[in-house]
Length: 125
Image: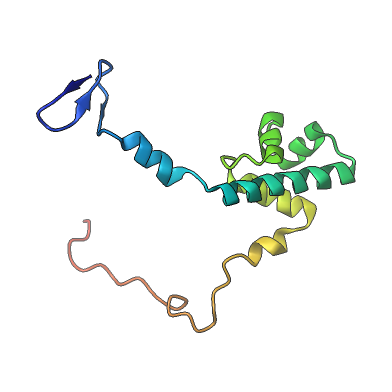
């Protein structure tokens, strides 16, 4: 790697990046240990519900519309699984009402009735 006059580093693959950017990105997009434990517990509960229904992983994955490896990642509590897969699992298991209860908005919340201001000039033609 070579230091350039712009204060950036340059590697032989011609990719530009700032020093430490990987550390910053990892800390921005990583989850805490407590969050990780919650997702793992969610995956364990999903596994228990599947077994209680008498479904194999392959059968349940097909019902969800996901691949078997993706479903296995859900059961392991992988935080990278798409939220939509979890929503389908909630619907299939009859727990979608619990999802609707997340992030309740207070009745007197100022953002509830907030409207976006109209554009002022500078609009596209």
